[in-house]
Image 1 (cartoon, helix red, strand yellow):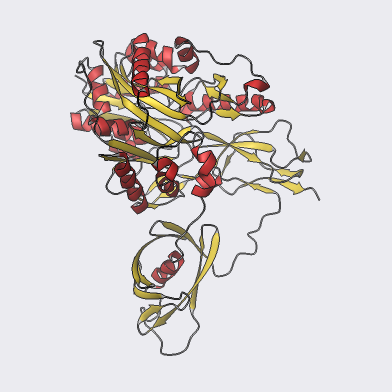
Image 2 (cartoon, helix red, strand yellow):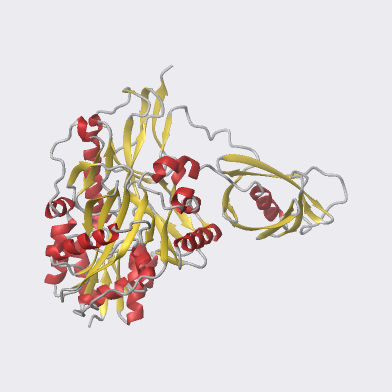
Length: 616
């Protein structure tokens, strides 16, 4: 029996595995980088071992250090989680060679399937060896790992070499393996997968289907089980998945992924690990996949048939990112995170910092109900009522996506965000949020403890930025408390530092207000308190390129130097933040008059990277 498990991972998945281990009475061991010294997964584990450094290549991708950590902590098993080394056959062998139990598939099965190129050959497929204009569009894809890293869609033949270079660099940094390949890019398809679970006694379960079509940057955003509207294709997918598992003598949990277009099934890959979206399968089948992984690793046999599926489950990934700004990841302090009435898997708690080194996913919210429509409504409502105070997130995008007619009618495909992103990210701020923020801030600010003067006086003013627009609010202290004359049909019923109640056209509305320095949250709406008088020095020269996020400069365009002529939209340099590369392009045609960025340089958000003097 396994008595102690080290999780060779971090964040949400480490916390999720620890939760099951505690329920089973198993001691838990965490590993953490220096950047994760006070991370939730390191705090909740029974023991934790430091991996010196911050970059994944120095820490979570160092299999030798992780095996050493397991032995020094007295663990007798290693769970890989997902990402990092979870699909690395050499790491699995190192764990086994050290006399530890590997809670995952045999190294030979990982080797056969973890490389997408080898997996395709095993299934009788092959990537493109050469690419011509007739093959476009194509997809450049990392052979190892997943999560959308190392993937690029190429629509112009002249872009292929640059995208191959970028994909290799990103794959190497994320997985320690820079191999990439090229395959045809199927547009307008649905991304559907099958969860499998196999034991050492010859039993293979196909645990239903999942639809993961809503994606950004080839990384999943919303997933559900079962995949709706498949009909007879469901059995075909089950049969293909079981065949793939048996072909490599698979053991443990894994996922076989497909693209469905025009009624045809296209094999994508087999992920030899637990998936981020595994909770929707757990909800529908009433099982704990991590507990079953541990039981299989201990040699226990599965029942002949899997449990019966019940109801429908939908999962939404909550990211610290700005969907309206090219999905730019966000950093800062997560002051408060609470999503009511649904399962919430997270690696963060109130007050935790969100840094630049790792994936920007904050949490996964999962709703289960008897029908798809009920699950969808439940999850959208929970996210709408959620309290998320901190950096910008994709919460509003998730709510709107779940309520979009195309998704509600199960007519979505992988191009959903290509078609609808602009509409889904159009700001729709609450017009009364600045007023509520000002009234809450004014509570108790009077020199007489919130008193009033029976004399005519100028109104007090407060300025806020909300959704890119500045607002000025005016209010008075009176005998009856705080009042406003700025909004017709609005009456102040109550105002204190945390709660404002307004009557708007006869309807009573509550506004919960939270303040963190200059950042203010009114219900779900974030605002920034502005000074009464703008700083005249806070101006940038035209053509300035500012860092859109904190990160590391990974490279500068070849031959780029001060004095070079550039065209509008030309890529000048690349930043890496949260395990993704982000291109910084020339804002206008002109001459490069300053270049402050150098490879390896750490920059903060808003840092001046370069200046392009516009062509007259």
